[in-house]
Amino acid sequence: MTIINFTPISSVIGGLLIGLAVIIFFIGNGRIAGVSGITNNFLFSKINRLDNFLFLLGIILGPLLYRFFTGTTIPFVIDSSLILLVSAGLLVGVGTAIGGGCTSGHGVCGISRFSSRSIVATLLFMFAAIITVYVKGMI
Amino acid sequence: MNRFCSLFSGLIFGLGLTISGMTNPEKVINFLNVARSWDPSLAFVMIGAILVSAPFFYLVKNKNKPLFAESFSWPTLKEIDSKLIIGSLLFGIGWGLIGLCPGPAIASISLIHHSSFTFILAMLAGFSLVRAYNLIN
Image (tube, chains in turn green, red):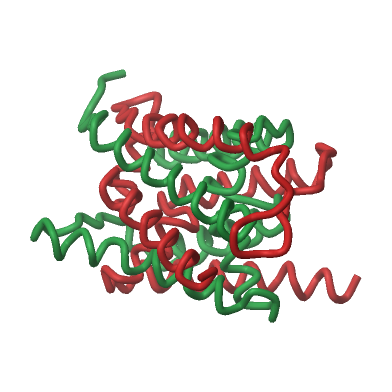
C-alpha cells in the first residue's frame, strides 16, 4: 500500500465545517443533519418540506460559494458508465432508506452521539465499500 | 429564523464537503482503495466533524428545546436489526461502485455533470422503491 494525494489539513478544516453545520442544524431546528434522510423526507413528506429544501439548496450552493471566493475549479472525476451509475444510485437510495442513514447521518451524527446502531452501520458500509472497490479493481 | 438556519447550515455543510475535496468521487474511491494506493483524507474529514459535534451532542443532551423549533428530534431506534445491517451493506456497495454518497451527490448538482444527475435520479428511484414497498406492506 502506498499513500497518495493525502490532504490532511484541508480535510480536517472541511470536517470541522461539516461538524459545525451539524451543530447549527441541531441547535436551531432540533434535527439530525443526515443528507439521505433529509432528501428522502423532502420527496415524500410535507413536514418541514421548506426546511429540507433550504438545507439541500445550501449544500448545492456550497461549492458555488467556494468557487466564487477562491476562483478555483472543483475537480469532479467519476466513472461515467451508465450501468454502474444507475446501479450505484439505486443501491445508495435503497440502502440508505432501509438502513436509516448514510455517511452524514450514521457516520458523523450517529458516531458523535455514540449510537451503537450508527457505529455498526458505519463499519458495515465502509467494509462493503472497501470490498467493492477492491473487487472492481480486479475486473 | 429556522428557515435561515436550514439554509445556513446546508451552506456550511456544502462548503465543508468542497474544501475537504469530498465532492470529487475519485478522492473518495482513493480512500476506499485501502489495499492499493490509499488516500486517508476521508477519515480526517470524519474525525474533524466528530471532534466538534461529539462534545456538542453531549452538552446538549439535557437541554429540552432547540432555538427555533418545539423540540429536539433525537433518533429513537436503538436495536441493531436486519434492516440496519442489510441497508448499510447495500449502501456501501453502491458507494464503492462510483464513489458518491448522498451529501456529495447533492453538492455536485452545482457542478452540472451528467453522471451526477444520472446517479441522483437513480438514488431518488431507490428511495421511491423502498417507499412503495413500505406502503404496500
